[in-house]
Length: 341
Image 1 (tube, one colour):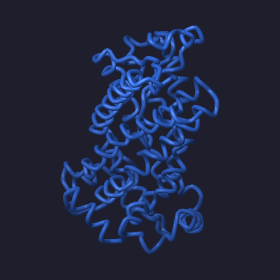
Image 2 (cartoon, one colour; image 1 turned 90 degrees about the vertical axis):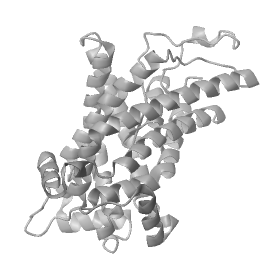
Image 3 (cartoon, rainbow, N blue to C red; image 1 turned 180 degrees about the horizontal axis):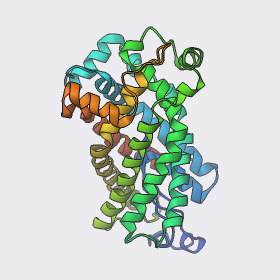
Image 4 (cartoon, rainbow, N blue to C red; image 1 turned 60 degrees about the vertical axis):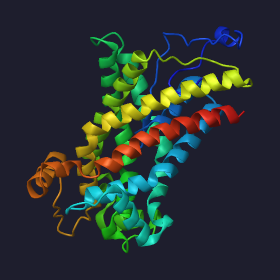
């Protein structure tokens, strides 16, 4: 069974004895994993692109949905923290605040557009990464640079796909709009009626900056961590207890790499995510005036009015959201790949 992070091995490797784990061909392209933007479970799309078939697509979809459901409370608090212009409470206080506001369902306000974006966004991201990876092979000074460049490119198609759904998610999560939008469909209809179709791509620039920054650093870091740990994916006979334990250990190592890489990449793209939330939560007035417009302009306004540290608002829940999301998504993909025929 091909696991996340590598393509399927050749037929000759598959026919080898289960007691001797076979290593994937070194010439095969290696895909790392990512989160919601870019998370570890999303690498299922990369595996699907190489292995093909419904048996790879279904685990990828299951992983994406599982990850979204698991970390959505953190995503809600993260967005609230980024939008708030005043000081933010602690993460625990933020979670408690949302709970008191509407209980468990309040945490999942905006989850529908988030889950709806999983499959198309990951497909666009990994298709872009795969194309750029092949195009850049041998042109860069080293493998890490090529992965970084391919990751940066992958953020462009991903952003084009995900921006409208991210806009709807942010509007639904914003406390200021709780009485304005009933649900995701009503939110889309209201935006189209009041602001026009172009408004659905509000925040495209900041979303692209966020995704390109994250993907580039994530892909390169993930690969370097695997090299550092000499981590390679093998094939084990999971019907035996020894094979299952060996596979579980490799899965934990890969998930740990995803957690570290995701947390590290978040340190660099967090300001762009804050700008994105500020820009997208605004409702365009009839005269078209907006406080936040371009990405850099937004960051400068935030830094001037709230202090330089404010561009990192929501960093703690965002870091946990990306790190845990990657680990949960990876485990969900592996479990689904084992259970599904």
